[in-house]
Length: 360
Image 1 (cartoon, one colour):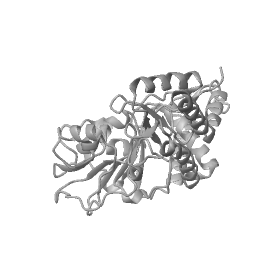
Image 2 (cartoon, rainbow, N blue to C red):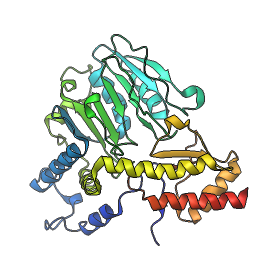
Image 3 (cartoon, rainbow, N blue to C red):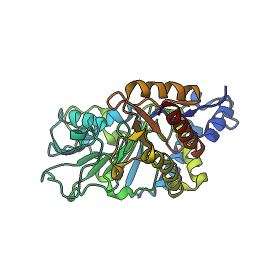
Image 4 (tube, rainbow, N blue to C red):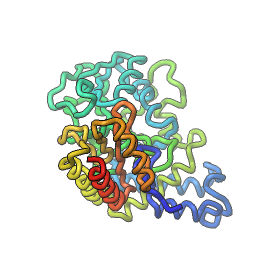
């Protein structure tokens, strides 16, 4: 069977050149006579893999020297607890709730201190990003937390909130490496890799060094202390070695493609094709306010549940898979991450046009 166009929100499409390279090295990684899956994380071969992966990521994102890069397990969801455990020195944090994952992070933080919801877009099913230019930031807040791109609802911050000098913490799981970022604006920028970078099972945390201390909440497990992993170069225990290896390949692919400026250009081009069609379609409509639209996740509906289901089924038969929307939004969602080629988006729009003609 030929490969499909996979619009899954995560685990998601990976670059074909990376998959081919990984397949070629499956039995024998660079003459070692074994797979990276079988290799000791303490071996010089693996140390080279993790060092190169970190350096390539630093190059791609221009990560300043006073930030550590940590390859951790537990996915982005484990960070919902790890962040307050490590950062809540005053026991207070401000959360901007723009979707399900920000909401879960906010709820988790309430176990460790006073979490304040200072802005939300829940009143309109998270279909927009609230104005964050003059928020009521708590004077003693340890940090301000956002989820920068909302995978389920298809929204993205176009401007970072004014945190009035407080540390900004951002979950960037679904927009990671999709465009250039100024890392110095964040205290912590982190993301699960299974959407735009690699296979599931890992989170990358980029954290400013002054936030890595032994002064954490009482009872914080050793494994949930940033200092543990920072001091050990992400090798305190056995990491997700194979995932780090594949992510490293993706970083090299991104560099070869021209880096994050070029990815932004490509992503804007792909998203425009789909949004332009949605804006003129009589049958399909996008669910997000235009100035909050994500380049990565595009939800849309017909307004008829039966028709939505028919569309998803017929699209799958046409080789356009994983288009069913999240249960909280319904309809459809096309995730068009870095590894989704422009041809995939063009094929989707062509199919949507045909479907509209047949079902008008």
